[in-house]
Length: 290
Ligand SMILES: [Zn+2]
Ligand SMILES: [Zn+2]
Image (cartoon, rainbow, N blue to C red; front, side, top):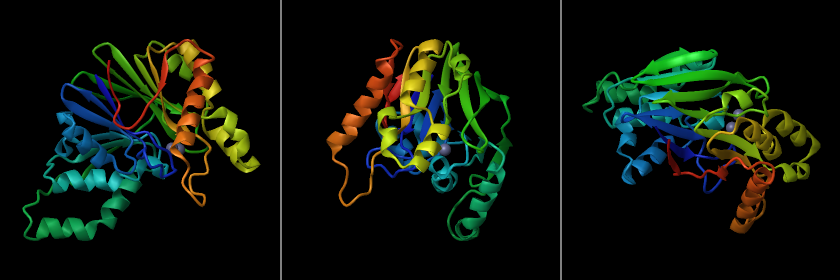
């Protein structure tokens, strides 16, 4: 299995991190987890770096962790761009309740485009812009060509949110999605070959207003909490993504690159100071083979 980080960002439009999106590749087929803004261009950029499985026509499956816009803002491009590039297969979409509504409303929003391409002179196929939607509940949600995907409910406020576990060839990759720290993650990530987990910079949380502190404490995982999880679960490798650095990204001037790096390093140190279990910060374009 190959794991590719297409987008490691957050709702902040960060200069060096696209919206949350990941790819799992097995037997030449890509399976996406989330579709943040820029997902198709991130795939084509990897295609041009030699990851031929990520040619846009091959993007046919996506597993959505939850319906926050940072994780779904690229849905329209994932639905339509590959179709315009002659993907014949409909897009298979797995996600929480509400996913079918999102799909049908976005299809409706682009009706002018799809009608024009379907009915006009463009030699478009009439299938690749359609969706095949599956509402996810806990348990096994997908099995095909030796890949099994399991969904576990996580805790992200009132939003129905899932962590996805991919298993193939005796290997296991876990994607936390957005969640506060969960005791059960110690079991889910136990014996994982790779854990892709969100994290926030604990020491900087106090810089936020009380309302934002309360929000982030209940919705996201602090680095020190992630350290406890991975110390117990001991995945072969943990990769942090969706890092909340508690920066004021859009003040009068941009945040200096050194400050972004300093906070990323400090977040990682909060983890590695507490556990010997291997952990790194993931960035857009990183690739892992398990
Ligand atoms: Zn998010
Ligand atoms: Zn979220």
